[in-house]
Length: 131
Image (tube, rainbow, N blue to C red; front, top):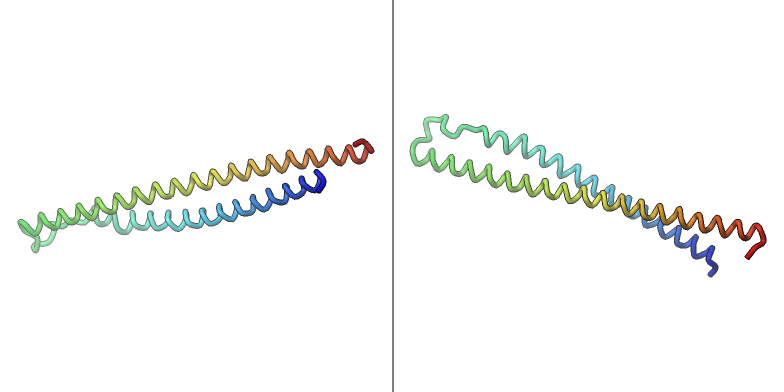
């Protein structure tokens, strides 16, 4: 196999790699969007209403029942906070993975550019009849 064939083969390999990375980015972005929407929905439809709900407003809660209800409410709020924090960390990890994939794509593109320059130089040598 000639150097020219090696270069062309390597360029095609890098182009396939870039497409694979782009497909990973699409999947990660879709997952990020899905999780982000769910996190916001939990914040707005569960956490904030639960936090704002007044357990003592009814006449049914007195004494020990009132205290237990407030303790359960606090436990629920804490568990939601932990889950929301974990989700935020997961979303950040997705963003870092996407950024890393973009860096890998840039590296591949730089390598392709370098290989194309080398291929061009080979073509110039061949067209000048110099070996």
